[in-house]
Length: 312
Image (cartoon, rainbow, N blue to C red):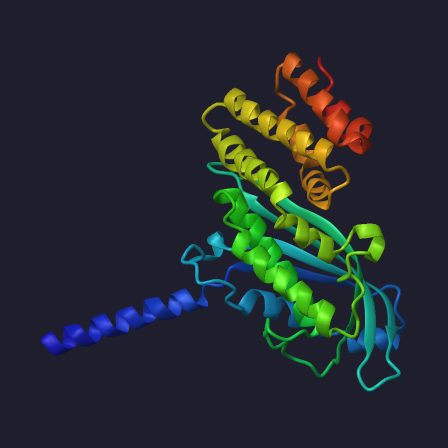
């Protein structure tokens, strides 16, 4: 009987271990837009979205125990808009614009808060339709896999930062190493150089995420989610005060270091949410918020913020 119990415990332990290994972090929806490509190029990309989705969703990116169920996984999406294709060579070459988005749940609600919404307009890579599996190796640059590694780690870092102050740093540091490898090894470096696309690129973005000048912004990002949105169920008024303080701090950072990507990325993701969350605020708080937004995100003032926050 003792041996049977020991065997049962061993099997149970093994099952738990396997369950942990199977609990990947990302639940990513991958879509493609092939409208600009000719029919023969489209045929060569028939399995592309599935190959990318399998790579992102089946790889274990961390050693964390916080992703034990599907409900714990990070909801994200990647959309490829193919711009051009050269299928004359041994391995076809493609150019694409890519949208990357992710979100996280708001505590004790059914709502999701967007964390990241960005367009990467400079992605060139080779892909063969016979390539049924992508190999993960962060020590070697391979254009498609390295691109996906980079954004998987950015998504993980943003998610971590929203739950624990500055806890996304290890993921951003891995993304930085991928960037440096791409700069050193990749034949196709567009999007990895700091001068690309007038400074709006992968290189500058990850540099800023790890720049000491923007450490306070990452702390504000945490406060916005953890002490603001996640506390809404207790007191909407107190939660809005925390949100407003975070936004005022981000505006101060923007004033000191204007035109930064990290500030721009914040409002690209958060503009609609900010407008919605403050609809129920007092007229005085709305006026104060609009003054802040007029300084830090003026391009969305008339279309997004003012219509939603207009005092009754």
